[in-house]
Every structure is written in C-alpha cells, then in structure tokens.
Amino acid sequence: MSKELTMPWYVKLTIILAGLTLFVLFLIQASSILVPFLFAVFFAILLTPLSSLLEKYRIHRIFASLLSVLLGITFLAGIIFFFYHQIINFAQDLGMIEKRINELFEQFYGFFSAYLDVEPDAQLESAQDAIISFLRENVEPLTRGVMTAATTVTMFFLIPIYVFLLLLYRDFLRDFFLMALARTDRDNKVEKVLNKVRSVIQNYITGMFIVICILAVLNSLALMIIGVDHPLFFGVFAAMLNVIPFLGPILGSILPIIYSLLTMDSIWYPVAVLVSFYVIQLFESNLFTPMIVGQRVSLNPLVTLLAIFIGGQIWGLAGMILFIPALAMLKEVCDEVESLRPYGYLLGKVKTREETEKEYFSGRFSSFSKKEVISESGEYDGNNSDRKESVSRKAGKDKAASKKTAG
Image (tube, rainbow, N blue to C red; front, side, top):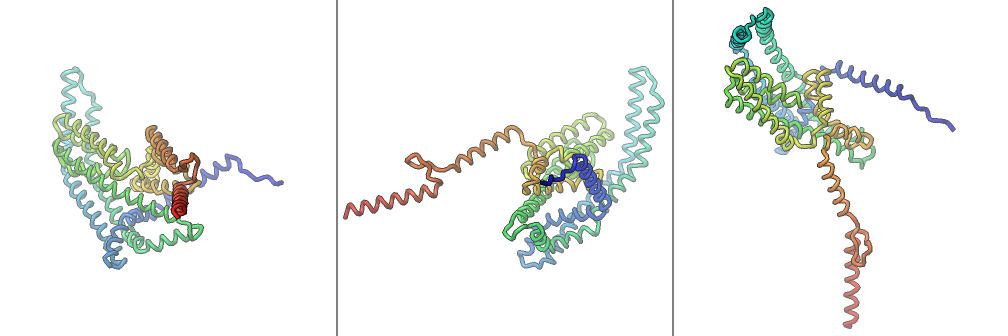
C-alpha cells in the first residue's frame, strides 16, 4: 500500500511566500496596465445602469456606451476644474502664511524674554528660517505636483477607452465567465457571484459618492461658520479623502487646522475646526455610511488598514483607493465558494456580542417555525401540506358518511 507524499510545512511555507512575492512583483511591474484597467472596471460597473437605461429608449448600445462615457468624463472634468481654481487661490496666501509664521516666532521670543528671563537660542531662528524656506521651495512644486498627478489620472486616455469597451461587450464578458467557470449548464452559482460583485461595487461607489457630497456640504458650512478662508476647498478636499478609510478623515482635517492656526489670531479657531470635523466624522461613521453605503461592503477594520498600507506601498495613492473595492469583491467571492468561506469570514465585519445573540435567536426562531406541525392527535403529520391533505381527506370521508346516513 503506497503512502501519500506530503510536503513538510516549511516547504509549503516557502512556496506560499515565493508565490506572494512573485504576485507583488507582478503588481508593481504591471501597474501602468492594471491601475487604469481596474479604474475602468469600477467606472464601467458604475455606468452600467445608465447605459442600460439609455438602451431602453431604443438607443443603440454603441451610442449608449459612448454617451455614458462622455457624461462621466464631463463630471470628472468639472471636479478637476474646481480643484484647479481653488488651489490657485490657496497658493496666493503663501505670503500671508509666511508673515504669520514670523509673528508667531516673535511672540514666542517675547514670551521667553519676558516671563522666563531667557534669551531664545539661535536654533529657534534657524528653525524659523527653515520653515519659511520650506514653504517657499515646496508649496508651489507640491501644488503643481498634486495637479499633475490628478491630471495624469483623470486624463489618462486609456481609461475612457477601457470603459467604453467594457460597457459595449459586457454581455460577451459575462457569457465568457459563465462558460469558463460554470461546471454545468444548470450551475447558476457563477452568475450569482457576478451579480453580487456588480451590486457590491455599485453600492459602494454610489454610496461613497453620496456620503462625500454630504460631507462636503457639512465641512464647508462648518468652516464658513467658524470663519476659515477657502471653506469650499478645505471642505471638499477633506470629504474626498474619505474614500480612504480611517486615514482619509485624519489627513483631511489636518490641513484646515494648520491653516487656521497660521492665519487666525486666536487658538480657538483651530480648536473649533477640530471639534467640528470630529463631530461630522462621528455622524459619518455611525449614521451616513451605515445607512447609505450599507453593511454589505463593510469590511474588517484590521484587514482594511492592511489593504490601505499594502496598496499604498504597491501603487501609491491609486492603490489605497483601489484595494478597498477590490477587497469587497474578494469577500463576496469567498462567501460564495465553500472552500474560501473562512477567508470571507476573516475579511468581513467583526460582529459584536449583541449581533451574535440576535442572529442566534433569529435562527432558532426560524428553525422552530419550520418544524413539522403537530396533528390534533399529538403525532407529527410531516408538514403543513400533508396536514392540509389529511384534513381535507377526513372532511371528505365525513361528508360521504353523512350522505350515506341520510340516504
């Protein structure tokens, strides 16, 4: 009797690590192809309902797909124009920020001289010069770099072409996946997975867009009430960074806090900005996102943070944005495949004790309601249909007996 050959654990671990290393190297080397293609896939999934709606009005699929792409490009161009105009206005305040830094250092010197009877060290002056030189040398290149990166991503000519082709051949690609992955003609599991992945991406993107619009309005109104300059720029910028979970809201609030600290006369202005952004984020995390985006795309925070950092290391900012919906797609696939369900459970949201107890009692109630119905004699008749059949049969016998007696 031949024994099965089993590899030692260290050999399996080596193979897994080698495979992961090759996969990461492939993602890095093929980033110029994969990044625009993944953006196109998500945009195509988002624009599919619009293209289908146009086709219902007897518009040919070619023109419906082309019109959907043009509408998407117009919307993105409007966003780019808005940020371009706001950043130009923001860059004009560089001189005022430099003047404010000088005033703060002078107050700092006066505090040391008057209250502590200590002459400020020469290193403080060098620190002041370093901060001012940093602002002069890096703010304008940083502004140009941000605009260049945004223009490169949005004006990347391959993305509209990919989106158009994906919309045009979406039925063809769907049939391909069904033919390649379905085991039998009656196997509808692949189609179910495809539909769930499409709905998850659509819910995620549309939900996040609605949440970003709400946050942009609330952030801008809060900054207007406080009196911070450029409220639209800071409010919309902080709202758009919300696409990066956990880190985005923090990064979005830092910029207006620093700006208000440098340009306002009182320390209460940055404190008010911090408090207002914190309250808005509480509403976002506990009300807006659960109600609008839904619980279907909520992922494990630990895995989400790992995906953000790994995506940032591999593809930069694009990876931090793309890895979240990709992780949601992977979770839906793992939930439908029997052998991958533990990994789907790992990616999913951690359930609290109350939610677990609620699911337990609801499961017990549903199983109790599906039990076999006890007959009037105290025995099981099988199910409701069997009970109804026995009752009708008994009624028929009683009716026949009554007719016989009457006769």
